[in-house]
Image (cartoon, rainbow, N blue to C red; front, side, top):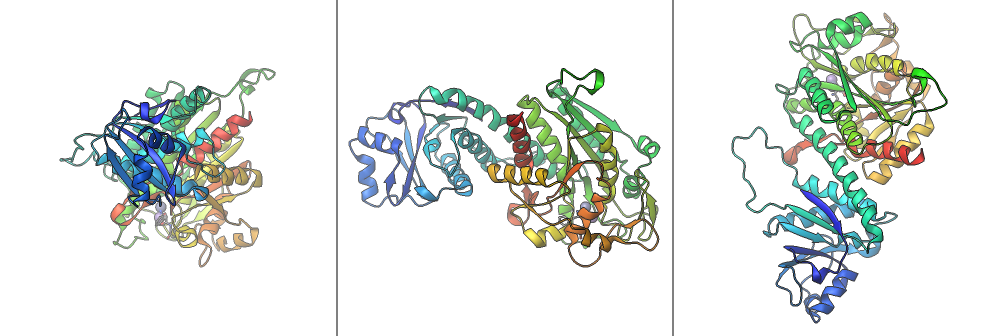
Amino acid sequence: MEYTVKSGNPEKQRIGCVVIPVYASRKLSPSGRIIDKASNGYISNLIRRGEIEGDLGNCLLLHNVENTLCDRVLLIGCGKEKNIDVAAFYKINSHMVKRLQASGATEIASYLTEIPVKRKDINWKVQHSIEAIDETLYQFNQLKSEINETRRPLRKFIFSVNGRGQLMQGEKAVRQGMAISAGIHLAKDLGNMPGNICTPDYLAKQAEILSKHHKKVKTTVLEEKDMEKLGMGSLLSVSKGSREPAKLIILEYMAGDKNEDKQDDKNQQAPIVFVGKGVTFDSGGISLKPGAGMDEMKYDMCGAASVLGVISACAEMQLPVNIIGIIPAVENMPDGIASRPGDIVTSMSGQTIEILNTDAEGRLILCDALTYAEKFEPDVVIDIATLTGACIVALGAHPAGLLSNHNPLANDLLSAGQSSGDRCWQLPLWDDYQEQLKSNFADIANIGGKGAGTITAACFLSRFTKKYNWAHLDIAGVAWKTGTNKGATGRPVGLLTQYVLDRCNDC
Ligand code: BES
Ligand code: MN
Ligand code: ZN
């Protein structure tokens, strides 16, 4: 879809459809009042007759409204003007798109930009409208042989802004919104791709494609023999049972301002490192998962997908930052040579790990990737992983779980979550929980027994992140939807790009 911004009165738009907000109860917005006046009270008459109340979800499509140049006017109910928060704004956009798709209009001028959303400015509204519209339009049809094409799809979407002053701002918001939305789209597509296609090698190829598209993104792929040399015995123990070779994918986007007063290779800002769990299918291994719903374990690489999505978004926005993406990519399968419960492996850090459950594989690949991250002398390291079913028990599908060894970093992520609407919620990483990881035979066990599964998983990772500021996002509950609307969400690309954007504004 093509997005643009424009200023001007609604009745003067020569276009397929003009979208106007109406508030509960029966209150017209400024653009609504203008169109009402032009049409000699036609709109307010309809409202008085009870044709639309203005509740969230209401809508009314009008044709050939007198003294307007547009083919249609769509009135969208927004609920009480004072109660419109981030979630309501998303719903309003989503209702609008569904109604427009059925209307036959292809070019739209939207005045939903005048909706007052609590503590949000015009930039935010434009950017998030784009995300909400693309979210509503998203379909994963690549693997269907027959697709029901919409006969007259939406083509062009114009956001109305107030006068010339807001035009520049609005255009920037459009660029940002489209970049973030494309990153979310990429993460969704990768997540939805089945395990027989989306293998570790496929993820590596996707990273290379991203590099081709953005000249500033450099991709390196380490093979199993490289990882053996590095001593990544923990990571390699997970892919042992699979015919698909493990890959360690490294993306470098180094566009940060140079530090002029420092010399040589040290003149770079310390990078933000994102580490994404890339288990392209998690059968559980020898600790095999039950059959019901096992297909959803194709989503066990959504952390990796979000890293690719964030880097794509930041490169597209040409943000002046240094970002490293590290993706340990493996498949977790049972086999005659697969790891067994009780096996002890040596991680790159030198710490030995007793694998008490081969289904706790995410932490086994992340720990080596986290040790590898040290070489980039990072400012912060954030890992993103569909790590524990326990996180769904604790928090459901609304926020991602957040655990961190550095409170300022945790606070930055919490606040980026608030402002993007892609939220996370902090859980404690107290030492008290570390005891659960004691092993009789190795330095550490890979499971923590009963209770606090999300926290003990993070405690495991914390043993490998002592040298830098680190945060862990458990996205088991938010990365995809189950049930009839099964599909990847692209989360937490919105949260993480917001985090990077906030840091750019500070510097
Ligand atoms: N990928 C799963 C976590 C998961 C399960 C995410 C279901 C979303 C939905 C992870 O590898 C796993 O299997 N974790 C185990 C850990 C346990 C063995 C300590 C779990 O959560 O059951
Ligand atoms: Mn598992
Ligand atoms: Zn897993």
